[in-house]
Image (cartoon, rainbow, N blue to C red; front, top):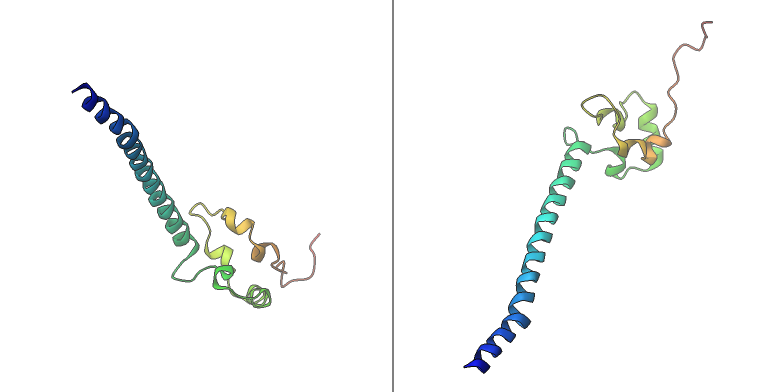
Length: 112
């Protein structure tokens, strides 16, 4: 009887406990992945307004982006401002925003 109990205890310790620990780790990682997926979807919704993604996400060439920015179109970073009016961090670090031409005023005379 003691040998059977020792054998069952040994099997439980060697098999069941690692299996339970592995199952708990898998569940925790699935929950973490679901949270990351939700955050990514939320960020994508912020980047997309009226189903119009930012210019970089559209895969436009830099020449096309500069042409759009030079025209009267509103730049993509203006369309994707935060609710408080600030620019998003992603826009501040974006190559499109950094390399955009500086808007010039229509009046070239300076008032001193």
